[in-house]
Length: 219
Image (tube, rainbow, N blue to C red; front, side, top):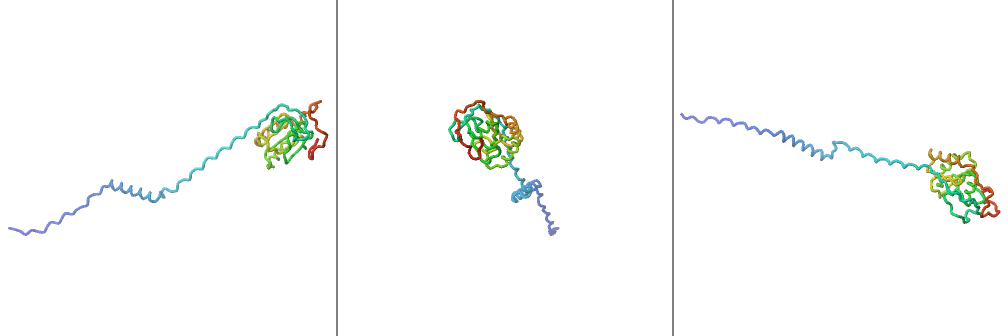
């Protein structure tokens, strides 16, 4: 017996395919990286400041140097500008000089070499400094020379070092008034101050005419 067809069976429920978890994880990681780049790296925080360049070490100060020169004689010349043989050192430590000396003590202006050499002949020591506007240097040298009566402290722009001491046939170059420089100056003063260098019976080859010393100078 024929029967009418019954109701159609319900269609089967279609399930979506299962996603690939590995691909999803890779895609999420790429998305996060792109987001960080777009944000300009703000999530990483500010970059540390660059370290400052190292400070260069100060150059070492040269040690004091004492030099001995041959005796250039004791001849007198009438004036500092009078022609004479060139000196062997700067400042000179012997040689032709005027018949008068510079006053002992502190001078604020340069004194001609030809005058100061006569001070050296009397056993004096000249403490010269190269700068012209440095009262602290002049004051430091004056303190070191305290107690020595035959001393001249004066500026001299021609000096080959910041500070140069001179005695008869000797000079001392000092680069700075540090401990080493002050020690060398004291030792130089102790060795040469007051040692007279006049020659007995010496006759000057160029005797100076009888004339008074210039203002401020002394015979």
